[in-house]
Image (cartoon, rainbow, N blue to C red):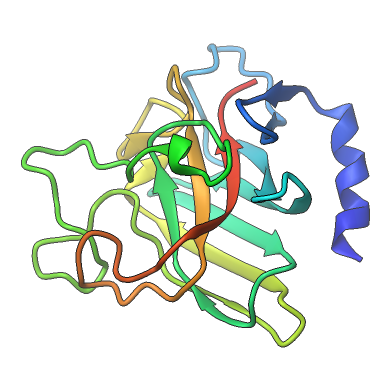
Length: 191
């Protein structure tokens, strides 16, 4: 079971967020927490609305963007929208995570398939199998774990959150592509 591997996280520095969310990072930056090199990474514990750990998200910095591996269970089988939200808080029902990261001017509309979009927090959908498990990798050029380089800086003063929604994101309609309730959340912040 993948959740058994979460016990290894106890050896890493933890940050408690509001509610029951936990953020984990694995790098000790010599240039400070606002700098990240290619290959630097962090990890966020994913929690459901009851505060139970249901998985993790592993963020790895690349040269042109951010790779996010999502491992979760306990979801409804089928497609789910995934977004990066602007605040590192995950108090259920996860509205504390705020809106999507979307710092450009003018603000881009939601949707990877929107002619005027996407906004910086948009990510591809993930699929939960018949047992409600997700094992997926998504990539974005619109975010980074730290300040240097292109994309939104996720580990800023108030962090950010990865949110999985109840439904599929249609990637065009506003404001969130019909993705529905926020059912899983994990805080992404520097330790």
